[in-house]
Length: 75
Image 1 (spheres, rainbow, N blue to C red):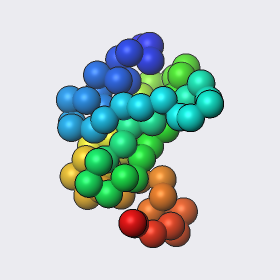
Image 2: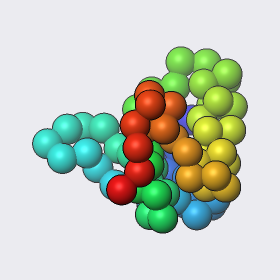
Image 3: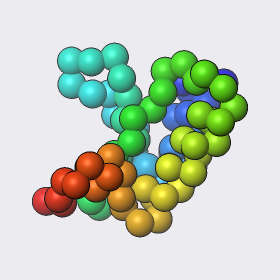
């Protein structure tokens, strides 16, 4: 699985894919809460693919991603 496949998973559930400023990483962003998950550039195993798919669905439905997971707040 390549990066473009992760982009497709993210856009299929309604997330917006953007590149981080000045970095080589991409983020899948929920535009309602501006919370995000990082898209892996090279998945290590099939568990990482399944974990990303579950995280993308969770972010799309609840709006909670990395910011909420680390105790941040919403704007």
